[in-house]
Image (cartoon, rainbow, N blue to C red; front, top):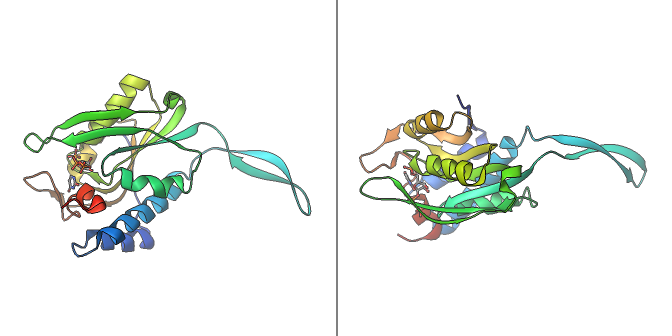
Length: 210
Ligand code: PRP
Ligand code: URA
């Protein structure tokens, strides 16, 4: 069973309160999504491997630790996942970014793929799939299935800002090997598959399309 990590750090909760507010501007929404993504990335990378190396400080030799092990790939689910990328690569500039385009069919709520471009060596990377919302879990589950089957990825984590219990259950059922990192787990989904209370349509709020 995958583990669900809930990051209820006060800074994350404060910024989450900003993006939940329907009166928040597009600019502040986008900036806050990026900041929360950085803070969550900081926590979610706590277990990355490091190795000891020798360097010279201006005062003398020192043994220091640098990142080792597999390299990272960030995979935003388009569109809304794009809003999380800058905040993450500001901390990990060497990460490669793959894109997967999925939208939810408004009738069936099933994900439909429309774009995919991954780094060629993605199978050898630790992959962070990012999307602000985990609602039914259909989009994230399809994205994970896709990169497992087409690219052979084996080390995958899922980062979301807000999740519904239904979405978490779906990922745990479909992908028990994938850990989930969220800032909040909300009450439920409504009849249109929106998270309640959630924050509305993340893509529209990041890009100002409604
Ligand atoms: C939203 C969101 C997720 C998906 C979550 O995207 O960003 O990708 O819905 O819902 P699910 O867990 O039920 O699949 P949307 O389909 O609205 O597309 P957009 O990012 O282009 O706005
Ligand atoms: N997608 C969103 O953008 N918001 C939701 O609440 C559910 C799916």
